[in-house]
Length: 272
Image (tube, rainbow, N blue to C red; front, side, top):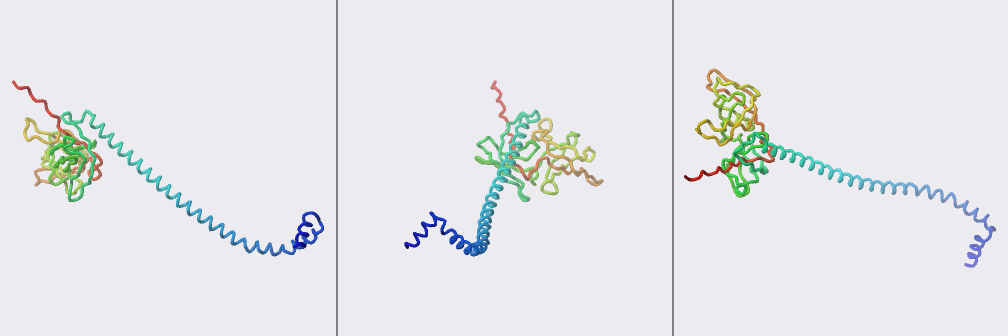
């Protein structure tokens, strides 16, 4: 113990042992280099493993952020589309072409039609003044009519339903009046009972005809509501009427919101 202290003291205060120390260090140097070389791969592997774990964790975090951003962008895009759709409804309601004897009730569409059920449910009912047979439209054109009313929801039969029938006319030739019914497929319409002598061409616009003059057979649908465009016109020598296929303006399979036309209350006449 005493010798160790002496040597330690001498190593700090004297250079007497410099040679001895140098010889010892030189002797141990190869072992130190070898140990370093042996340990280096393990240190490199540990560092690589840690870096790999960090990279994977960072990758997972970035993927989560990307997915969140995608959902946010999709939500913003959907909100923009919904706002644009509602703005079109509002512009249509304020346009001169809007039927003046009606009040518009905006309602969200809650369900979509199917091949076997051409109806939708809307989020408005008797609580909003809606009644059976009220007409339903969008800014693009005619949708259908209300067939059932509950407290806060209503059922709407689309113009593509088998039971739907709308008195319609070619906008270019007001004499070409017929009945608009379901076409050969679920998303097409057929304008029937139009005489062969009437002028109807591909590309013509079909609108609601409204009620005939003098109050005969009043129509539920106000006049001049756009319905669709003539896709094809055919006729044969044996048929009495033209065969007219109409493509509706409204995409009835993806309705978002609609306007229900509620008739305004007519003022009562004063009793005489």
